Length: 194
Ligand SMILES: CC(C)(COP(=O)(O)OP(=O)(O)OC[C@H]1O[C@@H](n2cnc3c(N)ncnc32)[C@H](O)[C@@H]1OP(=O)(O)O)[C@@H](O)C(=O)NCCC(=O)NCCS
Image (cartoon, rainbow, N blue to C red; front, top):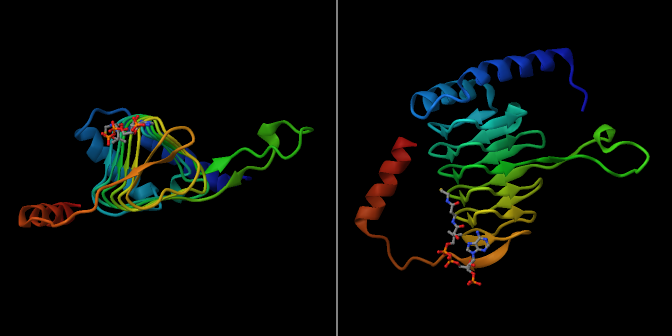
């Protein structure tokens, strides 16, 4: 991808401004990061926790829903598009990478070959454990859990628990028999605050 001078200035501005707050400790840092990322990301719906040292490439391709949390040292890549739903938990040291280097020919160094890209979609209420890698073109269904250390190369069905390299379905989350009034109230409160 060729980056024009306008885009270059925009990226420089983003990384300079975001760099000022990227490493601030939690709470004050969380608020500062949220304010700045709300201005630069494609979409930030409601309050989102961005912990310290979250790296974001191509922020204009990243959308995230309210009530979500992005843990320390995570890496979000919006090059091919990255859509994260509401109430998504992304634990520390996790990378979501929506691009690959091209390697179609052996005659040209990989770094000069055109990139390939495809959007990543993480639906609502997903929990991604620490140290996970989610690769381009993957959709993680509502309510799914990705175990620590997994490399996700294929779509994850809703409410599945996946793990391993490459990630495979380990089990499905149990189905609920009934929801208590207390649980309903707690969910309603969480939605209001998101
Ligand atoms: C996915 C997870 C929630 C499953 O928890 P659980 O239901 O208690 O799972 P269990 O420990 O009973 O393990 C069930 C099976 O999955 C396997 N498994 C568990 N975690 C795994 C992992 N990270 N990678 C690969 N396999 C895993 C177990 O070996 C076990 O397999 P077996 O039945 O063949 O022995 C948990 O293992 C995990 O990865 N949590 C993420 C922790 C984290 O990153 N926290 C960050 C703070 S938010």
